[in-house]
Amino acid sequence: RHIVAVVPAAGIGTRMQSDIPKQYLTLHGKTILEHTLERLSSHSLVDSVVVAIHPDDRLFFNLPISRHVKISTVTGGSERSESVSNALQALPHDSWALVHDAARPCVCQKDITRLIDTEDLSPTIGAILASPVSDTLKRGSDGYVSDTVDRSQLWRALTPQFFHAHTLLNAYRQAHLNHLTVTDEASAMELAGHKVKLINGHAGNIKITHPDDLSLAAFYLQQESD
Ligand code: CTP
Ligand code: MG
Image 1 (tube, rainbow, N blue to C red):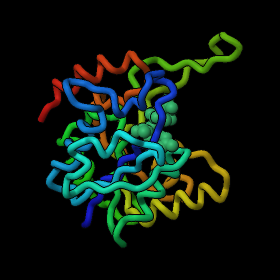
Image 2: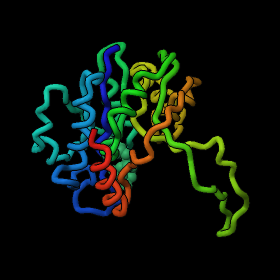
Image 3: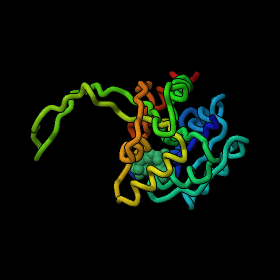
Image 4: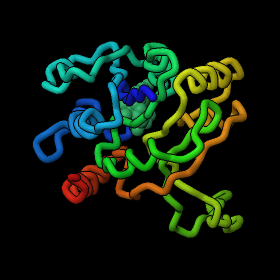
C-alpha cells in the first residue's frame, strides 16, 4: 500500500486567540506543526506527507522541514474538509490517506503503526484512533440537566484517520453535494455507508484548541518522545 499522510494545517486558530495561527506557536523550541510533521515523516510506513496550508501563509516555507523530501503542500480551503479534499485530489491513484490534524503534535508513532496495521481494511472499511469517554455525560436544556447520557458506547474521535484515499474523496464530495457538515473523515465515510473501525489510541493525543491546551501538550510531547 502507498500511504500518504494528509495534514490539514490551513486553519486560523480562532479559539486560541493568538497573533499567529496556533500551528506556528512554539513548544520545546519547535513549532507545533514541526513536531507533527516530524512524527509523521519519520514513520517508516508513511511514504509521503501532503500539508494543506492557508493561501496567505507566510510562515510554512521558513520552516526547515518544508524542504523534507517526503513533504509537499497544497492550498487549504475555508473549511477543514475542503483542506483535506484539496490534498486528497493530489494523491496518486489507489493510495491510502492517513489524515492527521496539524494541531495534534503529541500523536505517538506506536499508535500510528497500530492504526495502519488494523486488520481487514479495504476501500470500504477504514479506521480511526479514538479514546473512550471517561466523564459522566449530561444532556443540558435551558441550563438544567435533562438527562444522563449512557457513555458506555461513546468515544472521542482522534486523528490520524486512515482511509482509502479515493473512496474518502468521493465520500467528501457526496457530503458536500448534500450540504452535510462533516467535522472529520469518519463522518463523511459513515454518511456514505462505509465502515469505520475504532482503534483505542493514547488519550494524550489532544487537539490543541484553547490556550490552556498548550501546557498540557508540552507535557505530553515530552512524555511520548518515542
Ligand atoms: N484546518 C484546515 N483548514 C481549515 C480549518 C482547519 O486545514 N479551513 C486544520 C487546522 O489547521 C487544524 C485542524 O484542521 O490543524 C483542526 O482544526 P481546528 O482545531 O478547528 O483548527 P482551527 O480551525 O485553526 O481553529 P479554530 O476552529 O479555533 O479557528
Ligand atoms: Mg476550526
